[in-house]
Image (cartoon, rainbow, N blue to C red; front, side, top):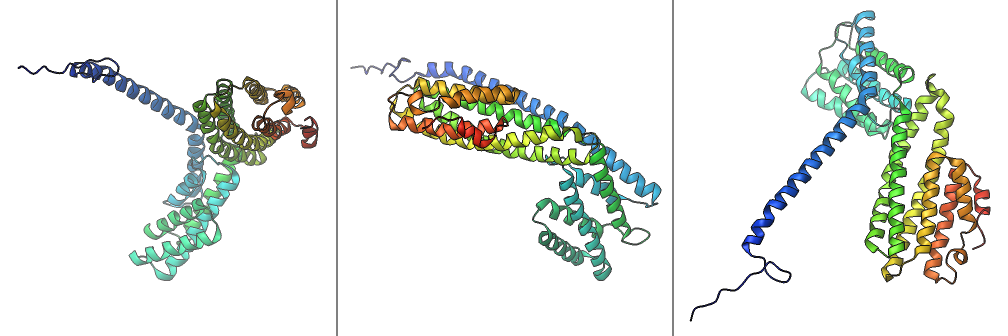
Length: 386
């Protein structure tokens, strides 16, 4: 009796046949090619953006290094002013923090490395074991002086150059003079030809506001539709805000430091200090939002839709948007939100678990009102009795 071969169908609940699998491969291959193409385009865009943002720093470093070379080579008559050029480039660099304090910190490390290694070169002379000995001594002394890794690396690099390069005419301490020249030039260029510090701070602020807006929009969806994955996504986005706050802190601190010594940027100091106050308030607000979102993530697991809470978060989201554009309007809007921020007003007859979420939003509103320039005590008075 002939054995009947099993019939394979491509429908739901059946095992796909070889023809079905073969037909799906071209589609999978096309999708993978599309994904690779998109990734390449995004990567190229990021590279071009990085180059564009680095143009001011590159021009500043080029000018400073050239001036240091000319002073050491032409005015002071040093034949090979390698240290003058390398110190200038190292001190300015492409770091996010281009503040005078950071530049001075690196310069001090460099000068310590040069001076200490030149003194040790006189005592122990050149050679392989001498290079190792002087390098480790320089690194340990630098670590003793400063906890900054950049400080220690700068001292170590210059110490190595002193031990490896032949001594210049005029004595080994000629390189210390070149280092001083480079330091003075780097500080002058930082003040007189500054990078645009406000643009970096503005980019960081924009990124933080965009992430907060996206997270709150996702949280609204989670509350209105009882969507637990949406709540998880909102929490994931909010967790990324801490790095953005740290980056904004660094760029804004650098901008304030440059504006203090630059005659061309000093007029922006009030604006930058206002941003500093806003940053501090948003740091606290982001922490509160993470707590609120974790609570909301727990609430939506019961599958109940909560449109009232979604409306409340929508109002908070609108207030944060206004903080970016018009703080007076933001104060007015958030004050209105604060006046009706009690569990009975938002959720009449609500359960304790839902009331807790409303109560958690109250300190968030206080932080946001403070960000608009309102006194903290006045912001707390704007809230009704819980």
